[in-house]
Image (tube, rainbow, N blue to C red; front, side):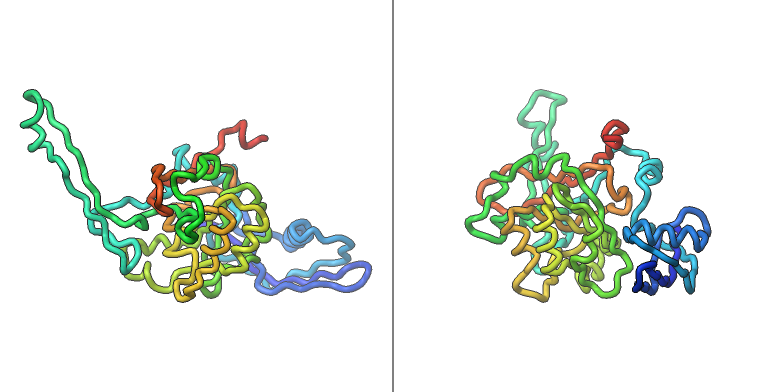
Length: 304
């Protein structure tokens, strides 16, 4: 488990005034960090000027996953260059309560096919009956708006090898993820993947109750900052108790696709990777399963 330091601080400015912080948390390497190093981090990260003094109070080191995992360290701990971020679709599984589970079977079995081909030759042709909202899937504007573009009109540059960033929010108080969780992250032109950790409940009853979600203000922030795509490893990007579905409404109106039911975001660095989530090219449908995955940037890309 990673180590983080939890502390309060007081900053006084040399030209008057000051700021305070309570319960502030910071990623650290090793088992401890000096007060002087913490003070320097606060000044640097908050971009403070004219600082007269910094006092660190109530410092304690805790075991908790880093929110800004160092890119080099994260990449070094990942053996594969491609990281699968999709749930496996299985016969009978439930993605969303109230929607039918997929039925996966043979259209033509191997045994049946032997009658159709030369001796020793056999094939299997599968059949699947499912709703579009199954497994890890993408929403296009047509899912929400009758005049929005559908799967067939989804631009490949929006969903293929897109520069991406992970925003980690595990351990937040409450369920709502507001715009402030994204304010410190450069999201313009990127796929923004929200790592709630809720995928640990996949295929359990817990998955369907009390999931984390984005607020409408978060959706407006992501839209206004130029996010290219937004994904989440939770049941729904919206609070399902809110029938207005503000996040779907805001993002899809702005032609920003949404990917729900992601998994494995814990395995990714915060940045330094590209994201893809490609559905079939189908007219008249706004949602469909994808094989979402990340491609870790190579050395030349990381130094650009």
